[in-house]
Image (cartoon, rainbow, N blue to C red; front, side, top):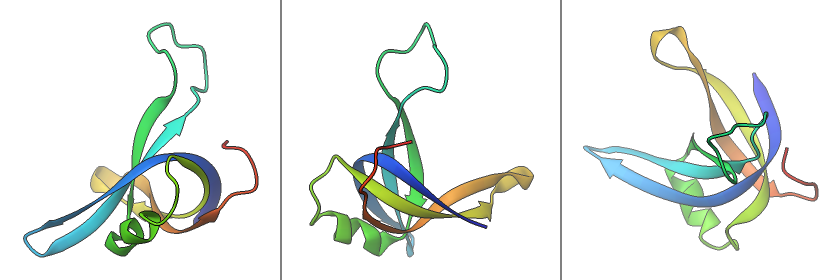
Amino acid sequence: MKIETIAHVLGASAYEVDGNRGGTLWIGNKPDTDQPNLAGLEISKMPCPYDMVAQLKKEPLPGVLSLLCEARKGPNLSTKLTVISWKRAAGKPS
């Protein structure tokens, strides 16, 4: 299943460990509810391909991007979203 979302991307990082390569996008989200112990944005991370980080180095970050994500199986029968592509967004973050 693929999902497209508009997100405030704060930054990106790439890694290579023992031949495994990947990347991470750092996303700033407005909290869904009023949380007394939170000020500002909730920060989350989403996995992405290694090469995507090099592409994003050419973009002004932080910035608002449209992310195409794919739901993938995670550990313990969980599901996690993995970013598979991006483009500049015309809208506001959700």
